[in-house]
Image (cartoon, rainbow, N blue to C red):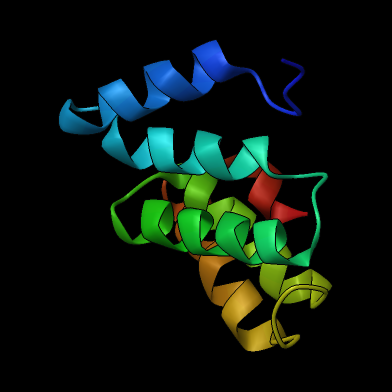
Length: 97
């Protein structure tokens, strides 16, 4: 069967949810949905938000991107700036741009 995602990666990420990788696993799961339809895009946003709230630097950055972009959720530059600042505070210098 042909899948649009890497099933081995998804399986590993779900198994890692019980470990210390939880926030980054949520972010990576969101990344797996990056080229999909609107429902999957909304799931991606939710996973990024969960990852951000659990402390993932990449989740914070990706949540900022979603709010800045405004394609999946209402465009909110204040929220985008908040999440970029959170990622920057974690040392993710790409959030500076």
